[in-house]
Structure formats: C-alpha cells, structure tokens
Amino acid sequence: MTTEFDDDNFDRRMRQLHAGSLASLSPQTLARLRGARHAASQTAPARGRGWRWLAAGVVPAVLAVAIGVPFLDKDPSTVPAAGTAVATQPAADGDDYANALAENPDLYVWLASDGQQLAME
Image (cartoon, rainbow, N blue to C red; front, side, top):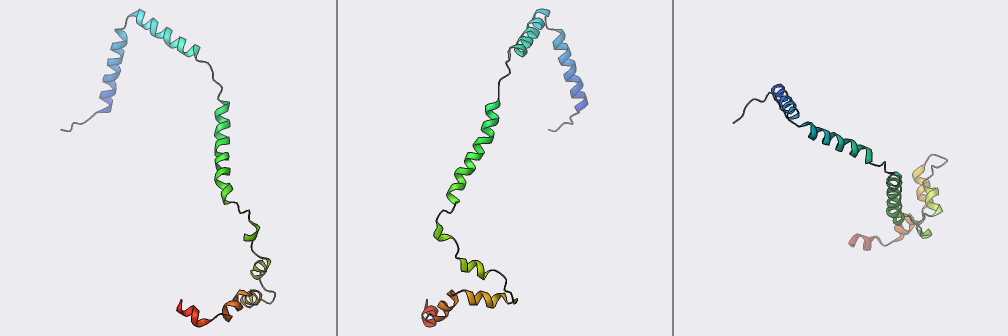
C-alpha cells in the first residue's frame, strides 16, 4: 500500500503542530525551560583539549616507528658487495651485458658446475 508523500504539506502540518504545542505551554514551564537552557550554556566550562592534539600527533608517530623498526636491516653482511654495484653501472664502450658478465664471477662458477647433475634436479 503505497501513498504519495507530499513534502510541502507534511512540513506545513508539522509547523502548525509545533506552533500549537508552544501555544499550549504555560508561562511557568516556558520560563523554566529558558532558565535551564541558559544555565546549561553558562556553566559548561571550556575544557582544554591540547592533550588530544598531542595524542593525535604522537600516537601515529610511535606506531610508525614501532612498525618500521623491525624492517630496518642492521646486519652488515646483507649489504651488497662492491662488485655488484660496479656491474650495474653502464660500460664505457656501451656493451653493458659483456661488462656485467666479465665482472660477475658467479657466471663462471655456474658454467664450471656439472651440467648433467643440474639437469637431473
């Protein structure tokens, strides 16, 4: 059961009901409500919220450090060797691949290995 809903009529009707309810309140009740509203706005102290701003900045920083510290690599044995850095630099004569093969001794170790044994693994 669907009926068409008219926003303008609803708004007008609610405003009429509100105006009627205000007209039916006694002056004593209105005075009490105004006094309570005024007292509530006057007694609310302005609270310092500086610690919240500090916490909003410090907590993410501490979490970032706590998460990032385990990823720091402190073991000097894992630092790449100097030969690796040289092998990635462009060659003076323009043949990058030939220079990389000539400077990396691992290629020759691999070539000297037993090819039959590698094929069976």
